[in-house]
Length: 261
Ligand code: N1C
Image 1 (cartoon, protein in one colour):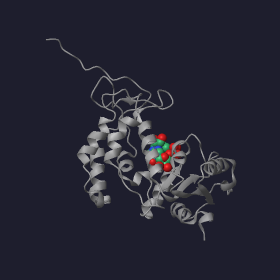
Image 2 (cartoon, rainbow, N blue to C red):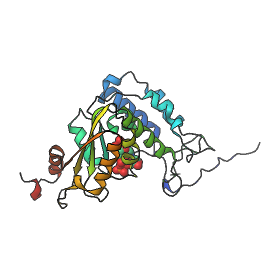
Image 3 (tube, rainbow, N blue to C red):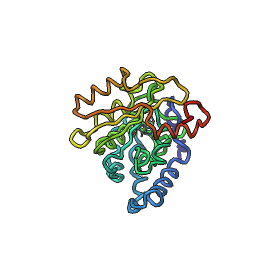
Image 4 (cartoon, rainbow, N blue to C red):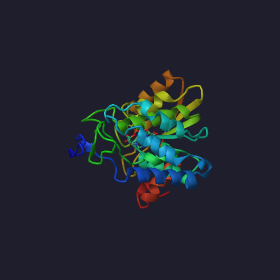
């Protein structure tokens, strides 16, 4: 017979699939549905795991589509109560620190699908049924429609579409583009909030402890956000250094002068 060597995966500029990706995904699904939110105990993690890998295995990782993730999205629908959605941009750590303490509020990573995927990387290959652990497409250098970016665009879109009441967002006031039109928040979430059920977007602009005090709510980048929301008929309000989140920053920097109350 003819010996067939496995065809090597294509080489990309980005990091490859996280080691033990599937086991981590399944473990997180069980942790979330059995322990974190037992009211979701009826979800079928085996089926969810298969739908996740089915979205990208044996496919070109540069031609990923929203459609690929549809079966996964249908298996992981989850209601977030009105007024409890927390969005963020360039402030991941702080936003997640906050929902850890204020358990009634949800970032995307506090929902099942975000919890499962957070911090992982994955891609497949059209010529193989395996994951590519060596490399995956880099958004900038290889392709924008990669399996990983398309996933975050798709789930972020649904998260925003599902939001109702007052929606909150934590923004980073210590960078120049506090509102970044190229970020997931600026490109996807802002445009997928539904004006008929979202009464207002409340922004909390947080400055790093020790960085110069500035009034970012009146900055030009926040004005762009204000204008977009006005055009979409969604009310907007903005607060600099929202007290409860400031307190969390101070827990990590107790000796800083701005943390002496
Ligand atoms: O591009 P961003 O922030 O504005 O995206 C954040 C925004 C949040 O409101 C989330 O609901 O979009 C959602 N989201 C995630 O939840 C998420 N978890 C992990 C978007 N991206 C997410 N990631 C990864 O972080 C993903 O790789 C993406 O490219 C970054 C976005 O970080 P950012 O620029 O600080």
